[in-house]
Image (cartoon, rainbow, N blue to C red; front, side, top):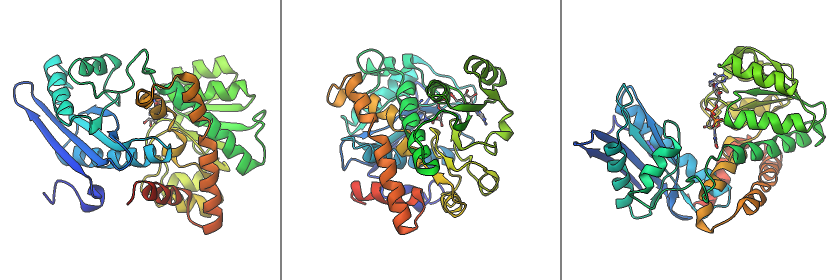
Length: 344
Ligand code: NAD
């Protein structure tokens, strides 16, 4: 097993289940990091991995990330994640989804699944025909979490402006957004409505240009956006974009965006701090989506969900305050706070 995962990623997971179903061709991993605060909640990713070790690493890291995210969002939920190992053609059949749903069901609520990369809303509805342990379904369960994530990120960006620039008035504040999909596009609209001056980039350059035209923003090539001459950079596309190299080139005073796993290794948090760049830990600022997805726990409506999302800036401020007090990078402070909450 040593080659299958490394100790650091395993991090005392409560359960790691490898699921196979010969008839449907399913191979999946369900990772439950912690149920200390409640059932382990986190999405299912459907992805083709070059080798099973990569899938295991992804499942373990994402599952621990959900433990931290849910704990810091004060949700009565632990952290888990599932990964379905797709074949190269990404063949997804009803039989394969049903076999996966049966595996989720056998955990009897210890793991609650939701939508993630490669899974559609219809796929989640299909899973819910087999198991009740599916969250964030369309309709009364809130559906697409993107707009809720975007709103939380917007509030976090305003908090970052307050801390780094001394103003919560976004009029004229220059913000660069990397990736203008569900989260980045929503963030751009909130910021434009508040009068911010926007620089947008997306690998889908037509998408960035169309939104820039609509909002009176500037579209730039993707390789320029992180180093743009702006006040705040908001990564809202891929993970691992904050590297030694990219951090050295940042001209903004703060990095606050919705993408998951922004720091390539974790060490970049120290570099950001040393360069005087405020960093909003990703899983704290982007928790709006999971807050909405887990609304079934107490039947909260949109107003109650938005009230919970309103708490995100306060959490960021507490982290920045502690970082200023101890000299620890913000990401390390957030990890430590989360570990305390989940009893690690
Ligand atoms: P999305 O697919 O709707 O949008 C992503 C956008 O980024 C797309 O327009 C894509 O073309 C663009 N993109 C991809 N690679 C890029 C690159 N190298 N440079 C610039 N643009 C690039 O996805 P989303 O739901 O908006 O999620 C964005 C990020 O936020 C992801 O990291 C995701 O994990 C994270 N996140 C999303 C949610 C949510 O509720 N949707 C919640 C928490 C975290």
